[in-house]
Length: 194
Image 1: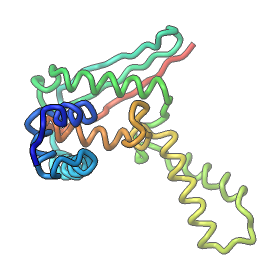
Image 2: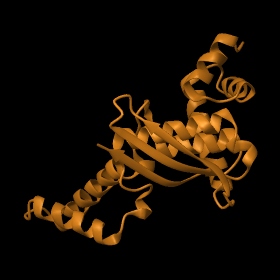
Image 3: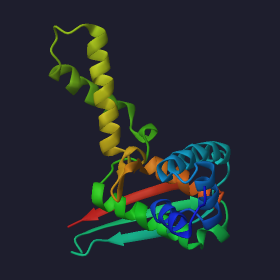
């Protein structure tokens, strides 16, 4: 199939990928944008797993202040090299994360950051809400489902991206790791509101 410039531009608009990566993904998927996006997500997962253990000592602090000047956020985003930290792709990604924090007010970055005591409190609340006549295994599944929902609401990486509900922040992070070729880590988040 002939991969047109318009098709490449549309794919780049949706994903933020570079021209050559976009062209290759579209070639591999015979011009099907949705299939190419799925392929790139898979590729991003594999690349991010390889980069996961790398040291992140460079980066930047990004801020976002809403138009009403009553809500704002700060994010510390780290990467491996100063070169990547200065790129527009990295800066834009940091801004998007700061916007997400301001919009959704996550309490934690990842589920691993949630203290065990908080998880146990939540489980106890859910236990009290469940009909006691249900079998124990069903109760456990319900509680685990509610804990997963809690993580989706309160943990930044598990949240749906506010600008594109087809991807989570974790998925977006993996895409950027694949695109930039370096490990990226969200180190700190803070949200302020009047």
